[in-house]
Image (cartoon, rainbow, N blue to C red):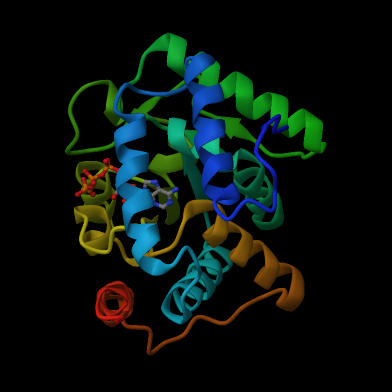
Length: 249
Ligand code: ATP
């Protein structure tokens, strides 16, 4: 899938690979104009984390997986950046959970929707996965949101009880929480509105978080929910990890 010139032994290879994926996606018309800015904000926080999965992120990923496995109607939401950066991982996770993915984007245009859906369906065929891909025919609205970004599928996002929304904006995250859903956020910025408002927030880079969930599911199968899980405490630990990096001599 990736035709990148950089050498895998380059210390910044993973970061270069993600940038390359965004460049390719931009050329395909999958991204909003602000996509690179959102990515840059994430990269800055990842630098402070040392580009690694922390203990608190691992705990959050395990709790997220447990919540998705325990759900009656789980769904994985995909926007342009997510489709560009981690399409295969999202499809694999949906396959493991036997749930749909739904394309749901902030700046909805028919062209962008078509480009993103085309990319996802191409990867789904390449991976030979039997995953329902929703988004092309929305028949419902997320209450509390205005305009095209509220559009969603009844059988997907609207009726879901647990929803994974990586790299989500604060307004939509808030609207989903207000609907009473368990909202799982993946966001490198522990201070963002989405990270704060989500039910479970994984402060980790998108593909690392998804690969953690896939690895735990493969190794352990069904994971138990941690009844003592404390969302705010886990977020604070993520922030503390970043601040401790600043204190190094
Ligand atoms: P909010 O509206 O929630 O306060 P925001 O305005 O910063 O946040 P957006 O710009 O809509 O949010 O979304 C980008 C968010 O995604 C940022 O918080 C950024 O840190 C995060 N992010 C970007 N790339 C990645 C990535 N690869 N992995 C994880 N998080 C990322």
